[in-house]
Length: 217
Image 1: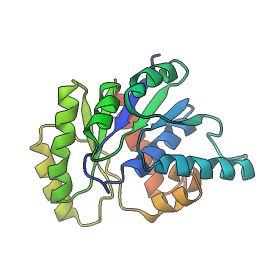
Image 2 (image 1 turned 135 degrees about the vertical axis):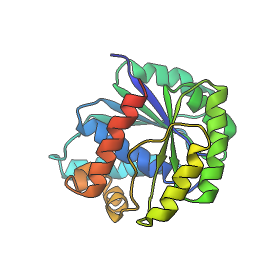
Image 3 (image 1 turned 30 degrees about the vertical axis):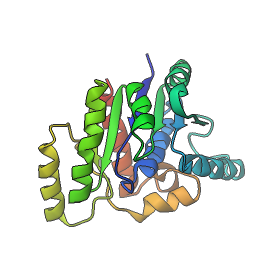
């Protein structure tokens, strides 16, 4: 079966894009998928996390998913070619693109089967999402919006979901709450499905991981 190539993108910073990418990658690896994460963000946050992960796994060899995930830092025009190479040996290739960088994001979006757009339930985030949808539309790449860092205030979330629907893009049924477990597991170089597998956060990530792969075709 051909690899699924998924790009996380959001023109507005602070949406939790990289954190979400890491947790999804671990969920797929834990489910037996061979996963490559491609980091084209100059901040290299995923590279820092992955280095910490390798140290943690060396000390805790029983962690599920060990060896099923690898990391690659790539920039510029080389993204498309390198992603095609990785797709031959992996089930999922996940590209984490930088915010505020149309050129870099365009390369990542053009290479993808699906663009996953994290959206925080705030007016600024919903408005900013339109730019990312436009980039994907120009490259004829399908998108999926995923509400991330969702607070317990149901009224605000409902208003923002309604506003997002007006953008005309599909919205994931699964919403990721603003949960401490997500950040706490990153500090250890782990995903929440590894560090707290019975938590509500892990259940949400697992559900979104399945939904994203289905949307990728």
